[in-house]
Image (tube, rainbow, N blue to C red; front, side):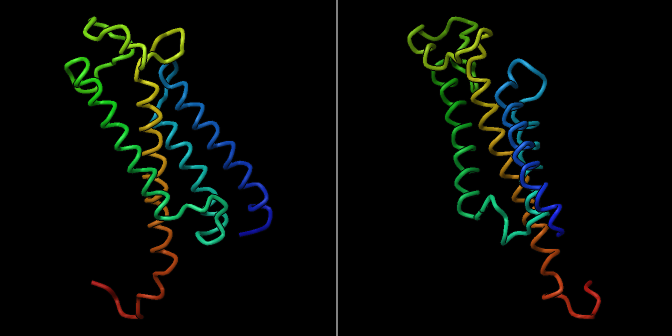
Amino acid sequence: MSDLLKLIGYPVSFIMIGYGAMTILGGHITPGGGFQGGTMMASGAILCILTYGLKDNPFNLSHERMSIIESCGALLYVILGLCGLFLGGSFLYNAGTNIYGLIPAATASIFNYPDALHAGIIPYLNIVVGLKVFIGLTTLVILFYGVTKYREDYVDDEEID
């Protein structure tokens, strides 16, 4: 890519990732949330992948690192759901708000998000879903980019059926 794209692509990708993080963190009180913020963050990483390539990418998204982040996101989602199941009686019960009064006050204060609207576990779910979507979409683009980049190495002049 050109030097101008490399000069502009990196700061713009940080702005996109920051805007995605802002959407994730404010998703319980504004339109948006984990999925929308995760796609914004992924678009920032994808911009760097397309601008710099896979080897010179400044984010250094290795397979092991992305696998760990996505696995932690899935594990934390299940843990938050099980907390609601064991404390409130249903999977993903919002233990911080305790709408039905099923959870003792001491336990509900653990999940009490420090916000005037008392969103409970919803912001934590947004963060976890945002991580999963960010890594999932970035992985998908890396796979497509790698396949199309090295397709000439595996394809002969013959037509593939």
